[in-house]
Length: 593
Image (cartoon, rainbow, N blue to C red; front, side, top):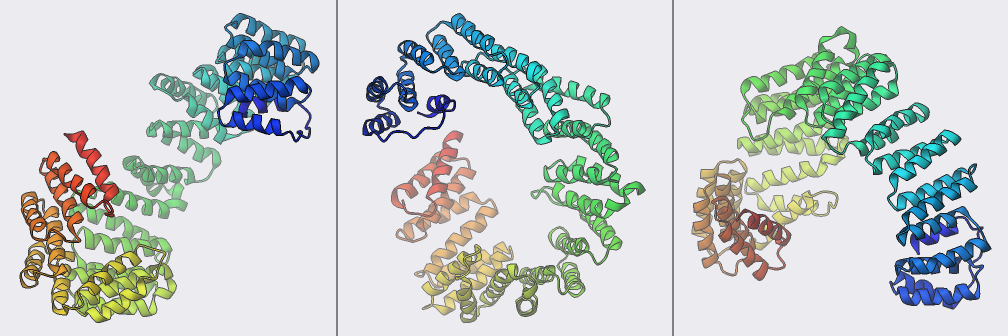
């Protein structure tokens, strides 16, 4: 009874609905889609008690759902004579419309207005009826009359929505600006304008209109804000930047609006535009207040701009480092300076392969900001650097220091440090000591580290009877962690050769396959894992082996074979943790066949 019941009840004084089982049955029939039964009961109820609006509303709704609009007309006429209301009269016009008498319906709606010219609610009711029947132009004409007559801001909003429905962006945009001038509601204006931005034609018109509006109203902050938003939304960032500069002058904020433009552009991936804005702030004395922010943003943008998949040149890396150094010089004791020091260290490690230089900077950071949360982050990073460098004893030493003295200032990183320490001990072959730390981590429900620790414990527990094999496997795993692929494969093969009947041998083959996948040696993966499926037919790693096989076949151009392997997982391992991934891949690979 949703729309019609509400439509009718809103104009009736609140009454206490009668407790009538027959009425409850009728409502139930209506809600369950049994419209014939609902209509029959509501008709009986209405005939017995024509003054009860809930019976009338139910009758109207059930008849309309059955398409009995013609039968409703005399019933509504009778109700109007009993108790007239313009909402009900507008409904009568809608019934005429539904029965094919469009001209009669429009004439009827107009007559309602004639009888109630000074009632703003009548205009709204009739325009709603016209809108429901998609007579947008008639509804617009009516609301324009009401707008001029009553000067009610709510009518502006209704009229704008009608312009949106009619895709009349020319008249609609004029009204959006008029409303903005009155209510200063920028968010609402943006929402309305966005609804008109449906195609190139409307966008071109709006751009032309807004540019002329900007020139005519150079000092109107609300209009300039709206125009800046429009240009940003349509990715016309050059025009947007000009407006942001104008806004900065209007608000007299000495660069804040320009910084806002730069920061948003960086976050949206418009790096070149962001760099231009940051440069303006850095190079102009007028914007000295935001120079520090600009240098920081500029360096971040340079980092973000460089694609993860391309090799960064030494020149690019040093340019970013120089920018961060500029920031540190301006305010050496600020949080931004601490973050800049950390980022310089990461650039040296990731892009310049300068582990020693990175560790030196990180240690300096820890000493300069010992009470800052970033000290623990820096110490953790030194420990991880030493892991990659192959210096496990130094890694353990620094991680133990961070674990004992620095995590109090950064409790969020505590489990990361503990896990890194556990891995260092595990990689060194001290399985018993590593187990103690992994055990303490599995109770941390807050992050994914507990899952990683649990995985390591499962590995240790299932191979506790072969400690020497486990120690050899851990060393091979460490070589894989260091990206020493050839040495790692050799060590994993050693585990397979010496301990062929263990699960560690099976894990080793899976790990070799992962390394080969990184190295794009797909034919070797296929040969290795097809042999694995034959030798270890009942392996608990069979689903993972099939998944790796399917990826190797896919990347070598054989999607049919890839789908075949994925289908094996669906059939034979329907409880696998990879099931959803398998389904997604099958859909993707089928599209490529």
